[in-house]
Length: 405
Image (tube, rainbow, N blue to C red; front, side, top):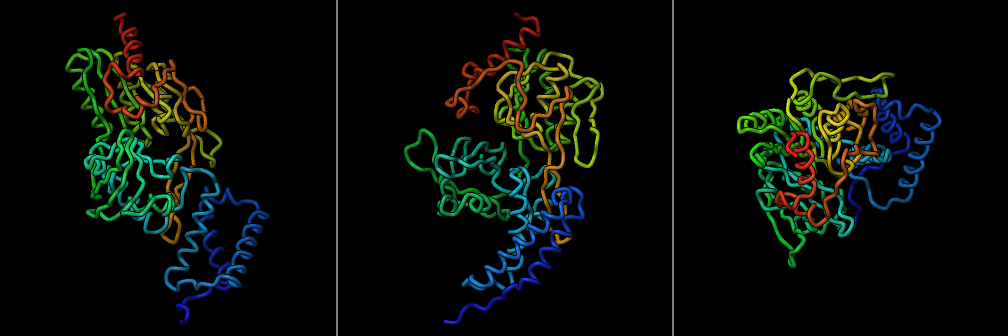
């Protein structure tokens, strides 16, 4: 049998391609700062040259004439960013970058889960099923672990490849096999990928005069939803407010600034530090200001701009914070487009709280520490007020601030 026709990339041509890619990336000062040492550049090129020579002499299969070139370059780029050991930064190939650009508004396309690697099974842990998402409507719950996607085991397929299969064209379906705590049998779900606008704010009145607002994510709809909740709770007699950002993985930076601007008096909300600048860029609130007492609940899954939210209210003494120390994602990312239609999603700035704290890798500490045990955390969305220890402490502290105790 003759081998499938393909193309071998010669050493010179290969290095020209790699050089072109790195040169394009280096036009952006964010990236050029990472490779500013000539010696390290030379080492990198030499390593690629050696790898290419070994492949040319030993690799038994041919490199596909159509897709092989693009796959190699994409792999080099993805590996470069992966080597930074920053889970928030990644490479976007042309297809993924176009998709990300299309969905930068409040509309999402997909199944709508926040996920992470489950060390126990090697599967995909569902950290949160977004409100209004296809996954939530299909019955997927927080704490579920996806073991199979379209009949293929996640561990056999590889975690990253399996995760990519959750995405797809609008209207297409994906079959998920899930293990759920308390269930002896595996559960099967068919989820249709659709466009949806997540419901980021839920609220209710507690004990007649205490407003409770849960913010599960910050996006471009959050301010409007927050204002609706605040007005309704005030009209119903709220004299104090609990803001809950537990399990909030972050979201849109501008959104959290807008919500904080509505809550806070005039002053600094947060500052950002960029590598290209010696100073800090501050973001300010005006004097809209919520006049009644506020308590914020956070936990170890409160992340990214949700940590900015807690820190701003804590450092300015606008709110009392209860719960546990947050996740410690204190850097923000931007998409940096490259000349070939691909992009780098790269950490380019760091948050600095009003009190001057940098919290990346450290987290934001609460004023009052109280944990929620694992069993209750798994049932977070179904907990009653009486079962929720963190909410109970928040109520106690808020009543003290309101002069009710």
